[in-house]
Length: 186
Image (cartoon, rainbow, N blue to C red):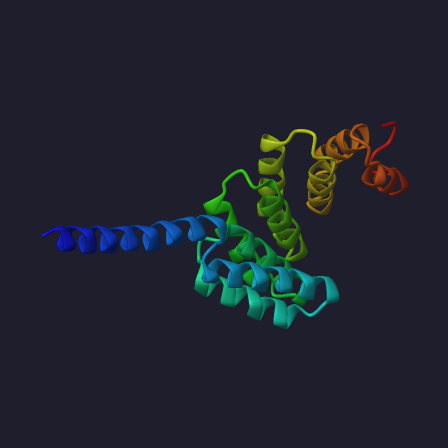
């Protein structure tokens, strides 16, 4: 009887030791899938910086197969698509990032830039306005919204946004509009 108890105790202790060491090991090291996703993500960013957009997109696609909830991947893949001129894909990825993180000003901002490139000034203005609702001190959002208003020939709103951007430190739009004779006396 005593031998059975000691064997049982030893077996129980061994099982607990194995489970405890596994649990602490998992707490220290992330799962391999997470490590692989991070490495692919970082490699994708490096490839964007080198202008290797096709391979960056392929890396981001692989990350999303591992973790489809990785919001930054949608944003970065959108950047790669934008740089390739695949504007609809970029807009789709920025939209996905926004749905996952509704206060991501950078995703609204970049989606607005892409929409403006496509000539979709109304939606670009809506995106820049959303950026400004979240961060009223975003000079580039004022500048780009002013540019969208300019291309819509709404010069009063364009000048107002350029003026605000200038107050925040970016006077490029205001200088341009003054040269064109659009913003006089600003």
